[in-house]
Length: 306
Ligand code: PSU
Ligand code: MN
Image 1 (cartoon, protein in one colour):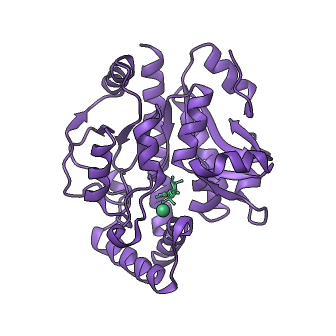
Image 2 (cartoon, protein in one colour):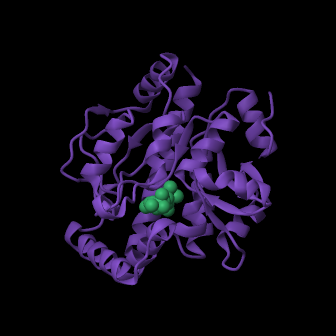
């Protein structure tokens, strides 16, 4: 296989790709900026295990010492997870600079899609994507994840988006970008900690084989870009809507009063919500990521059989 410059793959990931076996990309901003230590490293390892248990190979994506990585060893995961080292939050605009500077970075959904695509990985699991923030009319805060979904080929399995975002506007933006949103077994967009949002989807498919066929047909047609596969949090792990909404409102108010902006916004809100819920949101977050990793692995297996 032609090796893209700057990219390192573990032998396990490279071999699996060469043999056409299923591989699932995993993002790393969730490790470096999305969860506290030590739950971040524990979750990263459990997610990899969940992918393996379904017969696929996990490829956690990050930037280490300026090298793009698809597949990390345990010590490399620890560099990202343990507080202390300088770890950048890397999105599309940061990649060239992190590489040239020999830096470490956790990759957002956008940057992970780019690196996965360089490596030849089409299926990707995460917790939640970035989106159109509330009050975007004033702040212009729209995550680069949404434009990436419009241009880079990857199926991103997530649990919808948190209501720190404006969900209706996020859906409008995805429509403009031509990004299909397909519900796995549901016809309503899940809202991360809860299964329902009141927003209905155009596409619902009930098994990974059907989703894999739709992905293949889209890309065979030459239609570039991503697909968002939304997978609701299991009922028993979901949080009561009123409670989580209250915590989110209070986190948003604090962000506004402290003047938090730009790339700091999402990590600030995520940490505040963990604090406000006394850790319950973190437990739910871990469960839904595992649930998404299993679906992504099933999807990668189905896709590799087509
Ligand atoms: N949403 C979550 N957890 C996360 C993120 C978003 O529920 O960890 C992370 C992802 O890495 C996502 C990034 O790609 O935040 C989006 O950041 P921004 O809004 O700055 O684009
Ligand atoms: Mn932003």
